[in-house]
Image (cartoon, rainbow, N blue to C red; front, side, top):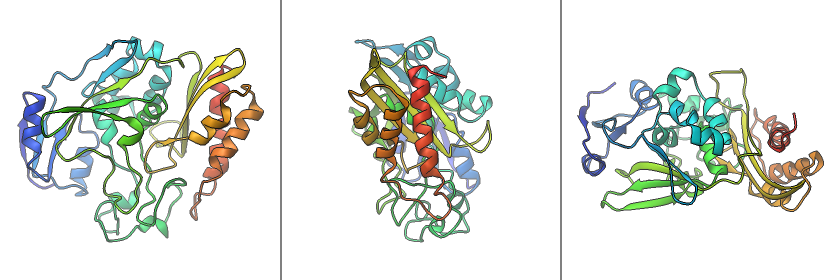
Length: 329
């Protein structure tokens, strides 16, 4: 780990002002990902600004029945907050399926949005990786790619986004509240926050350098009664998803009025399953219709050498998550 300067921010504007002119400056919340990146020399920081003294850790109701998640609220506190457990059980399930209790007790909501891929080639500084060092190549294309993307990949990068929290936020149509380097605040629709790799895989998101995440807004939810987060992984704990599905339904009797589906472990960003959603609207909530929606979504999946199993797994996971969301065992 290289030496860096370390300061405490006393206000959001001060934090932004401290990092904006430093190309290799970073904000520090819980540090559960950043510290690993620095220790492994994947990232090199010249300046770190600690945010933990800022008043950005509240989880509170907003006008219209929504909820605002403070960027510095801990994952465990957010997942177990009464407003989240009652109104957004999908989000609570996703957060409690992630990492270990110790990490959830340290990790922050804002930091979770910014965590970087766990692709082994990204962490191995002795191998080419366009995400870590643009222009060097993607080792996973011809290497071991069992954990890698089946949607939205490019020849530059086939890594996947690691977050469970973000998959649920994608399904819930969240908005990220950001303070810009000009001092102005803006909202970013969650679907627009993360990027697909394209020809710039080093850019995980659409934030400008120095912009600070202050909160995440959840709209009033119609899905509390019928939602479920399914995470399929190699072992039952402390593992990242092979495939995950956040499923939410608004039902009128047995008819689907609205559907929200997002997938994890399959793309460079949380993957909103728009084709499956469209296939479900107005249909009866039956396993047969769930299977047809899954087929529609997975039709565009493109497997690599070692991850073709993710396509049938993705179909099964969508169907299973929807069945559980409906309320059936």
